[in-house]
Length: 280
Image 1: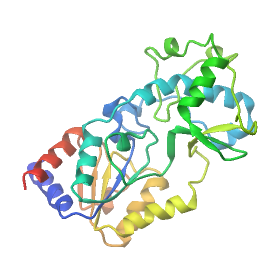
Image 2: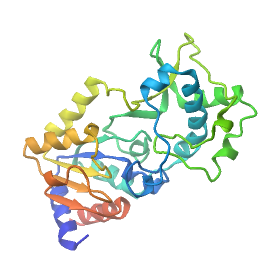
Image 3: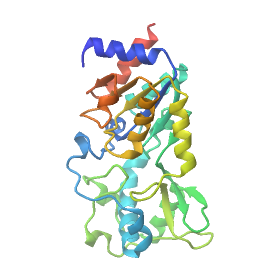
Image 4: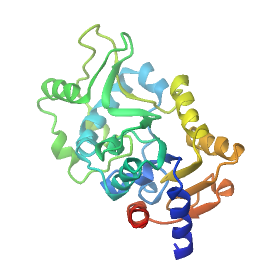
């Protein structure tokens, strides 16, 4: 990261009207690993797919047992310097909106207001039958009551947690875990997030595109842009002729369209950016 690069980033963001697209890399400093970056390289477990979840009671048992353990890390995570810097940029009126691929709610916890959760949020649960949404905290209480002998805290100690809040457990540890259903209609409960193999709701995608279309520039933070879900917004920005800046640890799928790329830690880089802009 050079002085000229950070100065150029400050110049771009300082003009305002910036749409932010954030990925898992911005949350790693809060203790949440990413999928493809430095903290995600040791990942061995495959994420749950929508098809497996709805098609198999065994898969749902495995998912909820592991997620019940993993929620302790996700639910207790706190915003880091990167999240706080983005919220500060929003408070200064420099952002057109924030589109996040993350499901951890840390942008909002840092104080950001105009945040679109592209893939939903782990702090909510949805019934697949009646579509009612309820707080994750309520589900966690019910799971504890249904599984009094399940040592979630002990299993979590020193364990590996995936970005979607899925802890790595053995089949033996999962065996006997009781899943609970919707209290209203008895339907299957699912976290209010988009699983692999599931489509993001069209109206949400359109809302994200509207943020990009109405922006003067696009700033990508901590996303490898290896999948269409995030890359499509970079493609749209490029087609509109918007300047694109990317801050990420490692190369991304959008580097060729970017006028500026920084391979650097998000927390320090965004804090420096906020300080530079505050001194103007």
